[in-house]
Amino acid sequence: MGRSELVESGRRTILVEGVSDQAALEMLALRRKLQPPRVIVLGGAHAVRNHVKQAEPGTELVGLCDAKEAPLFRRVLTEVHVCEPDLEGELVRAVGVERVVQLIEAEGELDSFRILQRQPAHRSNPMSIQLARFLSGRSGNKERYARLFVEALELDRVPPPLDAVLGGP
Image 1 (spheres, one colour):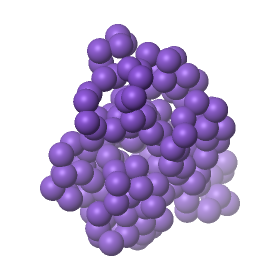
Image 2 (tube, helix red, strand yellow):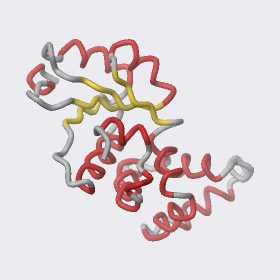
Image 3 (cartoon, helix red, strand yellow):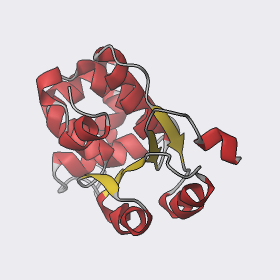
């Protein structure tokens, strides 16, 4: 990614780990009728240092990351918003497990989720762990469900890290 891709005068640039983070932020901005945020998808937390080095001086850079990646982000960014344990966990808590299962059903994937739940390795796991495994099980699931969960979200229940990184309501 070239230096010019990171520069946008007068707007903050949000550095995120993956496309699901970008999808959630863009959908939340749309729902709030805000200008879409400038989001750079790093493709993994370890790339944050290189992207910060490429930024034009004076560019406002902020981060949104999973809890386990927070130390990497905090080494190079002043403002970091952390999802506990990750974006999907924040969204599942905010939307509610029952509604999340309804959304999975509406997508025609409830049978797949129920099969996962019956597997010996997952039977005794809490629902939050089962949902995390399901969401990460197929390519594109995290991005698709991030959009769906933000669409289903009551705007007064926006997870604090997403709310803060966009600058609040």
